[in-house]
Length: 570
Image 1 (cartoon, one colour):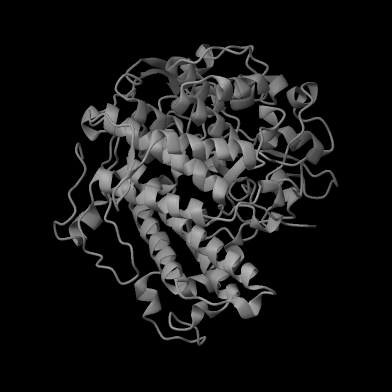
Image 2 (cartoon, helix red, strand yellow):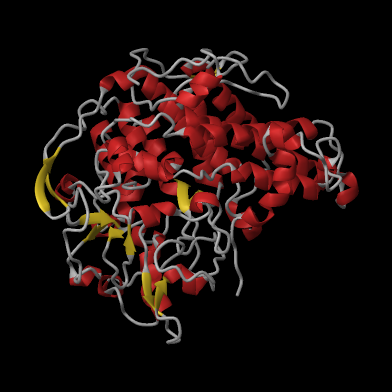
C-alpha cells in the first residue's frame, strides 16, 4: 500500500546536523558534522526534516492544536477529575511553572536548525547534482525560502502565545539576548515571510509533487504574511491601544495593507488551491463508511459525503484535496516521546469512557460550550459537520452514556476525534480507521491511531482574510456559497461570525478573539453542565491583565538570570 507520511522517518539522521548545540558538540561518529554535512542536496533535505521536526512537542500543553482550543471561549477543559492541567489552561490559571516549556524549547530548536541551513546555503554550489544550472539554483532558492519561512513560522507560533521573543538569527549568535519588543518580533517575522515569498518558485499547487505535501511553498508564505499582518495590526490596535495598519520590517519600511492584499490576490488567482466541494468532506468521518465497507455513520451516508483525503490532489485515500495548504503530518509507525508524532488532539478531545462505532473513546478534554450549538443556524451544514451530538443514533452516538467526565455538555468536536469500526476482513475486531487505512501494527484501542493531519492553513482562510482586509464580501460569500448559504453584505460582525463557524476547533478562535479585542467580553457567562454525573454551573473568567499572552516558562526566566521579564499577569 502506498503511504504518504511526514518525513519523520529521516529525522534521526537530520538531527545529526540540526539539533541543539549540546548535541553538535558530541563526537562525530558518522563523519558528518557542521563542517561537511551540508555539501549535498540529500544533506539539505535531511536537515530540513529536522527543521519540521520542531513542529512536534512532547508535552501536549505545548501543542498549539490543544492549547489554543482550550484557551478559546467555545471549548472547556473537560476530562476527568484528575485532569487539572486542562482545566487550569481553560480557566487562565497556571500553577505549574513550565506549562509551555516545550513550545519555547522547540521554537528555538527549529530556529537554530533554520539558521544553520541559511548559513550553509549562502555559497552553496550544487550544480554537479542537477542537469542544469537553473535547476540547481531553483533547488537552493527553494531550500533557502523554506528555511526563511519556517524560521518566521516558529517565531510567529511562539509570539502569538508569548509576545516579544529573544531574536536569535545566527547559529553562533548570542543566546543570552533579552526579549525583543512585540513590534521588533513581528518585524522579523514579516521579514522572513517576505524573503521566503521572493525566493520560492512560482509553481501552482497542482504542479507541486505529492512528495512535497506538508512542506511550505510560496502560496503558504503569502497566506502566513496575511495572518501575521492581521494579528499584529489587530493586537497593537485593540490590545495595546496603538492603532496601526502596517506591519513593520526590521530594516526599515513596512508591509502595507495593499501589499498584503496583493499577496492574497496572487494566491487566489494563481496558486491552484481551491475550496473542497463540501466542507464536511474535509474531515475523516466522511470516509468511515467506505473504510468500514458498511454504513456505520448513517448521517454521512444520507448526506452523500466523500472524503477528499489528506495527501493533496493525489491522496492514498479520498478524492483529492486542494484546500489544505499547510498541515502538520503524523506518523503511522513511530509515536515518538510523549506520543508527539501522534495527533493527540484526536485522543485528548475524544469522547470520555465511551467506545462506540464509529466514534471511539478519548480523554474527554475540549467539551463544547452549548452556546456555540444554540447560536449556530441549523440550516448551516457546517454545524453538524463540526459538532458531534452525543446520544444521537443518526450521528453514530446513540449508545453514549453520560456521567464519566467533567464539564460534560453533550457536545464534542467532530473534526478531530477518534474514529473506529470493525475490521472489514473480520480479523482484528474494532480498531481505529487509520489503523486499517495505513496497516498500522500497533493494536492499542485508544492511544495511537491518530494519523490525521492537523491543518494550519486552508484556502478558506485565504478567502476570509481577503474579505477582512479589503472589507469586501466576495471571499466571505464564496465560503458561504460552499455551505449553500445566501450571500450577504460585508461587515466586520458578519466576518467574525463566518470565521467562528468555518474554523471551529481549528485553533484559530482564541487568536481571533485576542486580535479583535473581543477577548474581554467573550468569557464570563454561566453554563449548565455536569461534572462526573453531578449537575454544576461553570464560568470562565478571562484575566485582562494577561493581554492575551501565556507565561514564559519560569525555568527559562531563571536560566536567563533576570534577562527575561515575565509576561504581565503571571
